[in-house]
Image 1 (cartoon, rainbow, N blue to C red):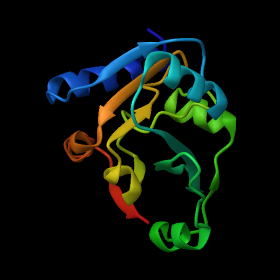
Image 2: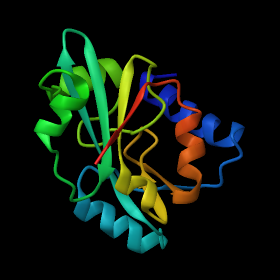
Image 3: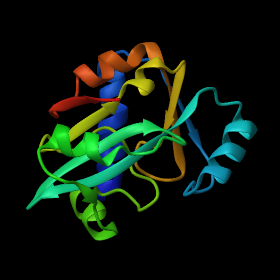
Amino acid sequence: MTFLQQLCQRNLDLLQSQGISHRLVEHEPVLDYPTAHAVRQRFGLRGVESKSLFLRTGAQRYAMLISLEGARADWARLKTLLGSRPRIASDEELIEQTGCVPMCACPFGHDAGITLLIDRAVLACDFLLYSPGPPELTLEVPGSELPRLLKAQPNAQLEYS
């Protein structure tokens, strides 16, 4: 099983073990928002697309900023939260550390050493749409289930707004 397949399985196992309702849809690879919108319409997916930015905050320190489509990063706020100025990690770092495909970073299921920065807007959405890893898959998860999903993550978590 590849690193990406393992990430996907961790995400699906986590949802199942926590009894979190979800819908999984298989489709063409989604690597941009126009394709994501087309997939959402074709399959009648509800919710808002997630936006996950993989950040490097120092030597071998990483964080995943989890926000919503269209959100912009507040770099000053991120520096305050993380204690140092972050930068967007390279595609190579994303692949090496998470197994994710560039332009399709999965927000959950990562190594415990990766800090999760959770935008409050994510918790306010009715449904969150995200890839569990492979760009050919989309999960639709009710927003009301996200606190339970986050609680089950082994990662340190910081609230970002």
